[in-house]
Image (cartoon, rainbow, N blue to C red; front, side, top):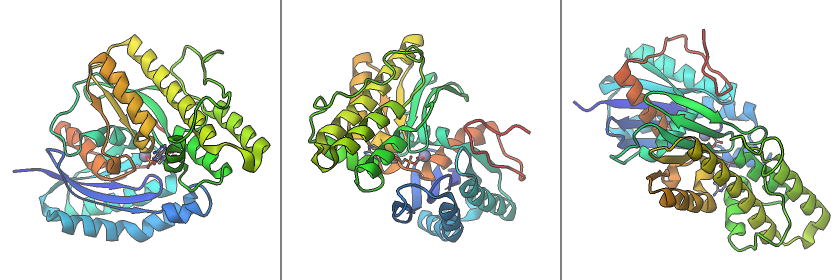
Length: 338
Ligand code: KG4
Ligand code: ZN
């Protein structure tokens, strides 16, 4: 009999529920985005996010279940993101998942949000990479390089300041571009000349040069200064093209360095910024040169969604990795130890 998992995701500002089967087929995924609410502030306001998760979590679960045609009794487990993320937001999904697991008598499976993003390219596909493979999660909350082993996920490097998507969103706000900034900058950058402005090459020198760490504060400050100095006369498309090219250049340098340490079987690039046209192009060229497969999520699965949470839970279901019903949440990338 085919096994099904109900996944829930509420770690930031998307309320999502999905039913996925053991072949990673997505039977239903429903996501309520709060982008329009947070656009008023140019960034996610945690209290507003948590309140809206409370309003939307059960209607979203209902819709996903009805659309999937799977009865609660036929589910093998309820999976939920419990870290990392905004605490108030995480608590809503985890509270709902616990209640359903108790009420339906189903196992509860806790999922790391970053691992979930890494599973997003596998949705609706039959093939998956063999460990060890390299995975990069680039989103509004994370820029994290991970080594994926057999049932293990090791963080190789993280950002020392902003996440890549956060840098996009902050620069877009200063440039008076729409929120979220990533898609807006990506669009305008495609018409610009990246060499017009002399922008710094990120972490090409200095004491972090030979690490795998990321930092976007240098490019953010440089672009902010130009925007403030030049005001309305700025060549915005050229400046945004330069900003984007420096970010992609750093990501490529870090992937190259990680690959020099160990040759991996495949590359996964996931998260909101994996929707970026220049990031996707760079990743295709990177893996093309090394003749290894590239796993990129479909555009709809780049943003936060519960289908990737349910998919991530299947190997855990196989290994019997269930969570206690007093499951807690954690803001950071490290799992909670009791
Ligand atoms: O994964 P996600 O939906 O939420 C987080 O977990 O953060 O990612 C949202 C982020 C935002 O910062 C948004 O600006 C960025 O992804 N983003 C992009 C693009 N589309 C979304 N950044 C660059 N280029 C894009 N095309
Ligand atoms: Zn995310």
